[in-house]
Length: 357
Image 1: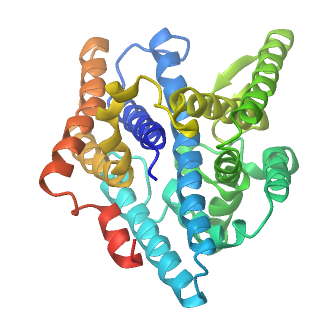
Image 2: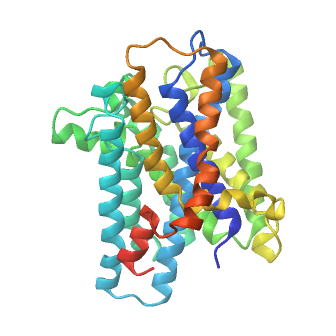
């Protein structure tokens, strides 16, 4: 049974990704880091990728679990893994080309990114479904503390354009594993979180207890920020929570917020009832089912915008805000129309055709 709240949170995750990427390409003039608008955009950005990766982990683990229960052979597993691995890697290259630095974008063509991370996750899911939840919970904790273990190896002083570039294969591997934009260490934490939330889907009390503990930990990070006199959250730099590289407090706080959002949107669906707000949020579901297609497609739009705006002055706050919101929300009706007119023509449809279902 396809759960409605999973499609909805997947839609919210990809739309938040669209919002933060659009805000990065069309930044308003005169906005500093301390401006409320910058804080709101950063909040969406900080939640978008963790939510996107966690719910992707949930979905891949769910699919792999079903195949394990059906007793798939080695060749059947290969037929499931390879299309996902190859397609996700190819989509990452396509995204990099669409928003390439040479045309006013943000990526080098060979940059490892979130889709590379998902490709690796697809490859390891058949192994993850054969481990106990306790083992995966311990692995999740290990990945959570990995920023402390990595220390300066995570590249806290790297600029954005250094983080998305590599001078050779050895440096490219380090970008993939621990100091790129979405490296395996520590970002597989969210994949493992998705698998644990999947296994606890019928135990809402356990998830709620985890959220409460996470909120307590979040409060401690706020207290630390006040006590030490440092910023609570920044994209990078001197702060308790940092995105590039992902700090341990960031993993804890964002993981808590993802689990909370999942529990809230779930409503009573897991126990046979309705998700939050019943059918009122059903408009989001097509976008959730087309999240990969939307993720890749919106970079084509942003690539064209980046090329047109290269060398042009920034937009004022209100026009930039309207452009960002419009580009974010337009994917909702486009997804609805897509499912009505050409439901099989998508990256998701291609995956289904390649792997059987």
